[in-house]
Length: 307
Image 1 (cartoon, rainbow, N blue to C red):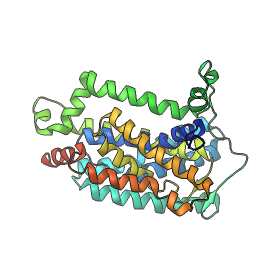
Image 2: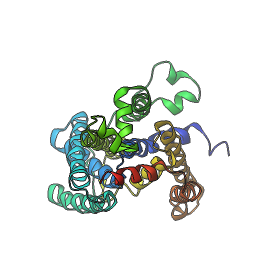
Image 3: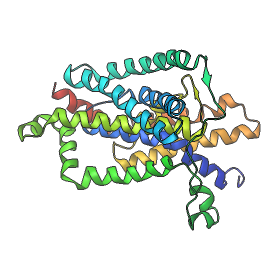
Image 4: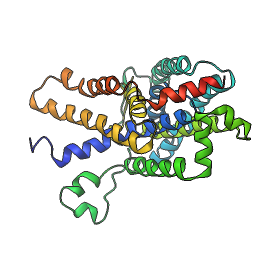
């Protein structure tokens, strides 16, 4: 058991949880303005593909991350325009964008790289690993925390920033009021659409970072459908965490740990088909026990009341 729950497992958990946490924080922002964003899976997939394309075009990993963020922001505007301006059902829009992202990345993979299934270049440089002074010398703690990619640390920093912004700033109160009661918010001069678009774009930024971490921070390659449901797990993490950044982090860590634990179990000759099911089984169990406690349900009702 000690060999299973060693520092390497928890270090792997931090790497695995980062895309989920970033996407879940994006979903939390959208839910706070009354938008049920089911398109997180597609957003992260576009970010992962754009990160590889950016690295291929510019030869610089930081420009690649920026390129991924910009591409997902543009992609998120489709969701924003259809859901906000045209009053389309955000669930239908989100599902459609997930299919669009899958088809588009598959097509562009063949059009740009002339390959099917996956693209990998051994000369491509991924995100660096940062060794943290002093902390890296602490037994066990240094092995877990130090040596991660910058986006891992950024994800947790953004969680604290978002927590402070939503609950300690005037702008955060206004954004939350848009989701809780858009009619009342509009009556006191708050620009509902402006805040909704800001939330959608912020979600695009976070999902772009999530995709970049997935394709540049872990494996430095892209495969068709490489998100493998992480966007949907992030959506569940948002619901389970009640769209509260601290709660989202806790639920994301749970799913990330189960994913990393499942990978570890593969080394014990346990069938990979079983271990790959673990994070999704935990997701279903979480949805069952917390089905009536989702902030997302209230946010969806509030958003629908403004239409």
